[in-house]
Length: 132
Image (cartoon, rainbow, N blue to C red; front, side, top):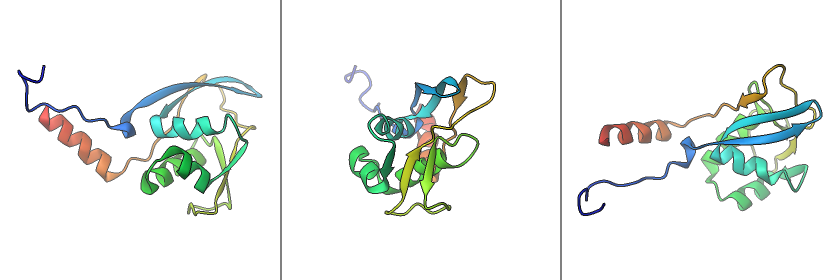
């Protein structure tokens, strides 16, 4: 109630939200635990097998820094759901991303996709904890 607690404020932190996606791969169905940004990007691949960086940026509205970190997390690491062209660490405006149809992850049915957190997110979480 705003009258009883006027100094409290609810802040939305989309970078710490998690979603569970069910995905069918040639080697079986998997449940993917992904961040909100990862989920938004992966859902674009329901309509296309390959998407350019500009298209992802324009259709998601995610700011450049978070978008690059999120795409990097989907193309590198243990769980590589997307393939990037041209290969390399840098994500450029001309980069193309393709859905990894040959994805397989042995044994586990539920897979957590790692995120790359920025210093800003970690500081925001710390401030939230301090206010509580």
